[in-house]
Image (cartoon, rainbow, N blue to C red; front, side, top):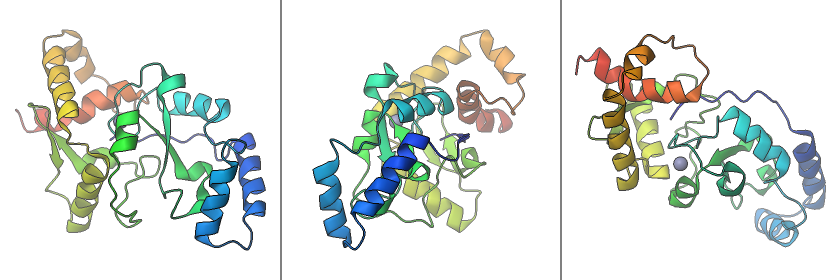
Length: 215
Ligand SMILES: [Zn+2]
């Protein structure tokens, strides 16, 4: 995972929808509020042109979790709710509660309960890259040098989104192989870490530990 800068505090159209929805669910309990959302979702939408456009820009067309490029972004991007729709209906239309995800990460989300003390929101945790270690065979593991609490959080995220799934390991392995064979790699190593381009961040995230360890 990489840090993602959420430039906008709010999206006007979404904020309006959220306000409308909150009015409609006032006085309802959680179950009723979710049922209400379900009956209104064809009218009250969070996945709109507005949100898609903003996600495309802030994520550099990448998934917030596996960091893979989402091909045909407008069609294939899915909206992930950090706190799930069923557990916290009042946050269904809150911009802060939304991240964009590829279809695999979204559907892979396990039934594990949302745990705010472990969830690493890539738009809030600036040093999110430190939590994970990537290996030459494409696998991912938890950075064991962290504190116990941080280790627990990293484990939770890997499990929650299946970040160690076979297809991703395979993709990362091919990525490393291609990159090492590319002379562009030398140039990448000289890039500054403050680059906001996620593609570079990804490369560094995958590589920096191995480089530091001299592997
Ligand atoms: Zn993904």
